[in-house]
Image (cartoon, rainbow, N blue to C red; front, side, top):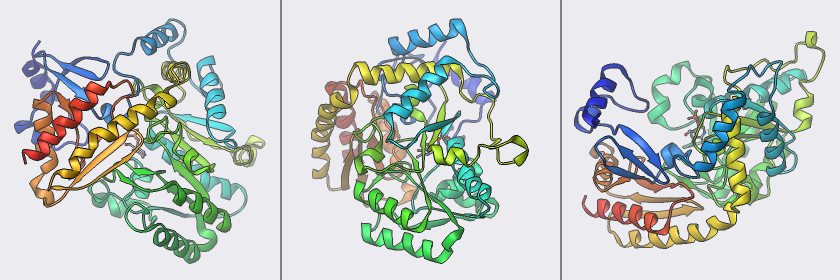
Length: 428
Ligand SMILES: Cc1ncc(COP(=O)(O)O)c(C=O)c1O
């Protein structure tokens, strides 16, 4: 089998996500035969260093022997079971461990199977919490430049025009406060306060991506904003939903980004890295108090009846437990500190390039923003192409090239991914 053969069969039948399919006429996609560690291998024998953790999910490398083993063990006993009326040990372990690991006050956990669904659940739960308490709070607020997924509710609280604009007419109306990543912290908080004042007791929740607006070009802000926002939410009696789907599980340096602000959100959404990048799984965590607002006799009608077929999938939960085992036994958060410093060192030379506007970093996310290019120049695509030819998978967001490698990446691999990006920028 060759790349060409797989491509032809693929193109005959498959419509790929987040793609203009016509682009593949000139820039063919890569048929991946296997993965090992930080590398992916195609059918023609080429390799690619996965500098973006395959859409920010892979934490401990492809085909990780330990995660493989744990999934195989699970496979021998139970692959999946309906999660209404049934449970299984792997799900219980994930729940116990996440309640232990996350900030105190997140006592219960609701499973789903992807990030967008977790956002939908948090929004619905927030709305229904108030309904169950005889209040109607129909306003959701998020930040400018935010991204929370592609399903209709998640898209509605997002603010990246590229994904949202075309659907505007059919999305629920939401409101965006200024982002602390784009304006000063004070201005951002003030704009949030204005929305709270404007909508008063109609505001149900604010949803944010703590520290890094990843799909919003890796825009970064300080933990102090989260702390002050939480205080503001407290003042107005509004829920705070922390979307840590991309930044959770060590990405920003601490296990969860909210930790760095000392904040306990009312809802915490997790996905992506939760299974080490193996299988779809997400969770929404909340307090006993919120859980309690739904707990009643069935006929009272306060139940939360949201469900997905693959909710709490046993194989995904086994992968999640294996991922959490690795965090524990290999002391990953501690070990990542040095690697994060190494990444920072490798990123310094970018500031010398005259077409670089800014370099920024939060933990294991590094970004290089270019200047002087129009969107229709599609400079990101040129970088992507250059990098692939040089064995590195980068996937720039417009004019922003970023690094989000698996945590098992070696210093040599980090050197390679950054030097290829450097040369790619220089070649423009
Ligand atoms: C912050 C954030 N929230 C939500 C999502 C949606 O997750 P999923 O793609 O699993 O639906 C993403 C995906 O990139 C994300 O980055």
